[in-house]
Length: 129
Length: 242
Image (cartoon, rainbow over all chains, first blue to last red; front, side):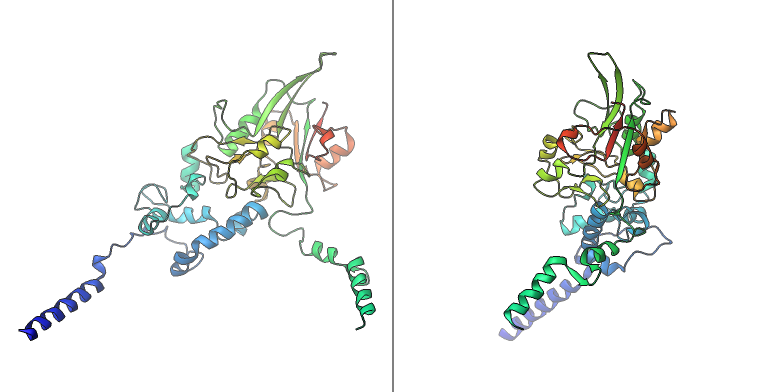
């Protein structure tokens, strides 16, 4: 009797451990593809971990030091140029869009787009005309 | 080293900050920021000259151009942000009238920077006075401190901002001397460009420190005044014919 029960418990533990390993049970953010033809300023793993620091240093260099255009390597404007959704023309308009999808997943609120436009140059200037 | 010897060396070091004969620390610091480097150049002082004898009464092309360039309200309400405004002045005794645009005067000694509790209001190396919206808490001390009424507060949420000019609710803002143009090699501001296109040419933008520039030549040749010169703020914007 005890032998049967213990083997049953063991089998259940093994089953649950196996289920936890399955990636299908954990929801993952959908990352939209960036505009083809250009490479990012750094590799994806580094950008996922460090983009907030890169942007923070760049913003101080830009606002206080006047580093703009080609000299601003980690410019938010340039991120948006490539990563804006082809469908919505934005990085945050829908939850599937590039910035919104990960930030919704990680439950980290972004307030960049309360002041900055979330649209690439062509779309933003076309809309405001 | 004896105590007397140490004091002597220390006094010499403090006295002149001389590293070797003829070389001082300040010269090394100046050489570290070459004129061709990217970003705000400390050898430049951006400024404007406004010739009120050429400024047309009733013309608001500079205001419209500023609103369009920076994505401000095209139909301003009494609470809309205002970076540049036209004023009409009249001397009561003689009846002489003049018209002029007034915007942030980009003071060398800006009172808005003095009062800012967070350091959001600051002066760039090239003399442009700006608000860092990342640090602005919207307390509006700078609005109170500015004698030119050049700062505005954004009361409502905004959308459709220009990519070059981020702006949003809860921050103070003002004329940036079209810093997004200047940093990318632009030679003039939206207001000066519009004034020239309208055929008035009443606004000249340029580097006050460069003796070859048009603005430096003009302020050397004609009489100009600073608004509220009594406050000794040394504004970068000068007026002729007031």
